[in-house]
Length: 613
Image (cartoon, rainbow, N blue to C red; front, side, top):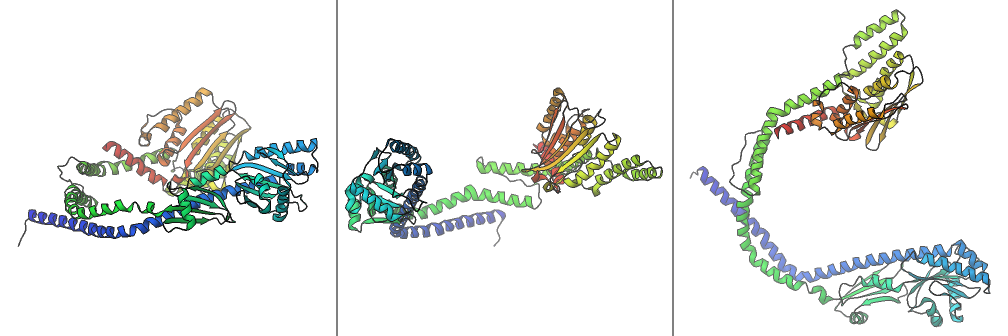
């Protein structure tokens, strides 16, 4: 049986539609079956997720509390080792004198200032054992009861230079009544004063934490109104608890209907527990179950509808575009796709047709021509300063001058010959900075001989900048301007400074002279002309009208913009009577041996796109 072209296309399209239907069924039906099974497993998943979220929340809060305790402990160390406070305490005897009262007032003032630096600190107290005086930022000074005094003295002697956390709710044994007045109903840190003195007096530092801040930190963990969060100290005493009282009682009985998560701090050994009724966690599974039943019923219907829609709306046009792209990649530039759509895919098809036409025009009519044009323009700009056919003749002149003992003329011709010989550089357009300076020095030496040594030159090239590639003959026009215009009229004392260094992501080259400088009007004119070149699109740089001045600066500006892009720049500074400095900045990422060829291609490509559009 034979099929015509139309029969083959119908059979092919029906085959694609059938395959799409099968693909959707293969995808949807197993997903539906897995969804049914997932309903049974969702409770375990939700439970594990709830536990994981609770652990993350508890861990985060516990880390925050540990950081707070660390800050408080660091604060206590600062206070306990403060030389001013220790000196004032040691200077006070066992009786209250006007001087000791003034010292205590100064201590309270300093403690009040320290307390303001930590929002978790409610009050700071210092117990002075010699005078039996308790200094507190909360209410000033008082003398504690005998039981309270004895407990503080014994505890300070027992812990030495360590730290003790004491909860007011837990009490302190036989002295609980007295200690409650020191620690109130919250959490306090206790440690000795004058930590680094083994002969210290049993003076105590007590930092009381704000219970409202602790309750706020714990309360933020409650996932619902029926949850309960509790914080216990390292001795198991309850520090703070927030949430539902009913859940708290159930957690104390160990009820099975609760989700309980406990985290213990490795730093403080505190323990935090979150309890939540399981019924709240599993409530979400009920609606998920009905959704899965509905999905199971719609899966088969959607498989047929989606497969037909995808094929007609997306697969067929995309396949045509794919075939057209394959033909373009194979070199067939006359490809055109027929379409009758006005939607996004129709727009893509129309754009593809225009793209193929533009690409054909660019390749055949513009690109190669503009590439050669850009390369020729760069070569022309550089050849204006690079005549190479003279160096053989100059060598002959040099040897002739040696025969006639014309040493200065011979040296001048020799340097000029080396200058031209190095300019050729075997046809290469790129030097390293080190080679550029060597090349430049030949020219400078010629000018020194010409001007009878009226100026000196100094080169300051950083070692890390010496091997960076750069276009040749960038500095020579700048040095020529500095010598001819800056050193004009000087018989001696002239100085020329050439600097090369790396400045971040740029290679910076500068030429400075101590010549007569320029007037404000002249420097503004030069900057405006350079600004005009800087604003001109790169593809039009070489098409600017010819002008009769600033030849060297225009040449350098044009070459660095063509070869190094928009980031390259040329700046000039001058002050009348003081000298002139010209600076070239080149991006290091474009300072490569292939920069000349790459710049030519980019310039050609931009011109081709401009004309094609």
